Length: 383
Image (cartoon, rainbow, N blue to C red; front, side, top):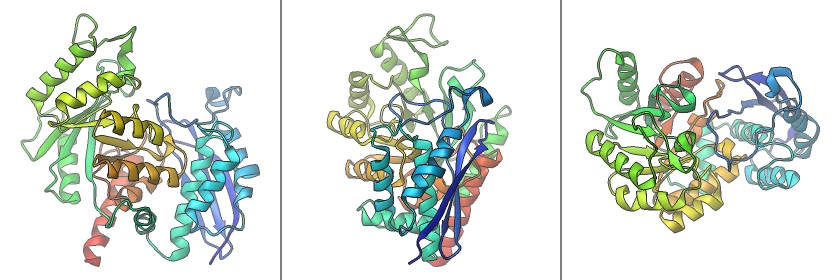
């Protein structure tokens, strides 16, 4: 089996013009894989640390030269000579070298760039498609017995930290019905996106919200423009019930602040049988927080973002926990993305219920939707 012979990184720009880390992994048979990591604008407090050059004024302190150097001088050197198909062993070594709970020593962005690159190199070494190799890793961990095309969630309108300041809720989704193929769902999403501002089509489409309540939680109240005064937890719950009655929301993400556990539990107890109560900032792909949410019955769906935890192995472990709990799995991009389509293969490989890659526009998003289209064609031919 091929061995890892060289690892190197560089600083590139993401879709927002903000630096991120791109890492290449070379094998001794000449194969080279390249992977770039995303970054979020709206981030949870409990996410693994994304290392930035805060003390350096270049890129307004957002540079990632430290993280790049950590790949080049420490992390990459530590996995030389290892088998690229030993994803679990390589990730374990990276975690041990960093030695911190939130990867603050060398940076989750540095660590994930290697972990993703190794996953791509492992697939290439075996002559497999990336989604098939991710599936092999997932099936080994007891996550799924087959690959699956996810239902795409299309973000049609931005608000909150992603918007222009006129909307408090962060994302307004169009969700194709589950009886549609991915190709049909992609067409529906694109047509709705192109029709916004004119009309919304009467089609097999459901609605969903990423509320991102952290962004408007102030002084113990939830303050939104639709209300003349702030709402307490119970008032906000009644507000959500009204939205559900009017729009039959299929998914409600981050409805309360990231540490408002009692509110999450009450929301789930009163609305969990109606809609998917999805945790993102609450869970941040962290096994301890996911386990707490399972134990306390705080939600029934999890947003999965590899860069929130820092390695592919740890991400797979969280997906396993979510699956075992009977929750829905939503694999998501971040607002700061590259054209790397790794997350699309990952969604198929772990048989995610949903994939959220933004609106069907802009290169870094379309790259992922087009990758899912290619996988769907391949899977249809294999059958």
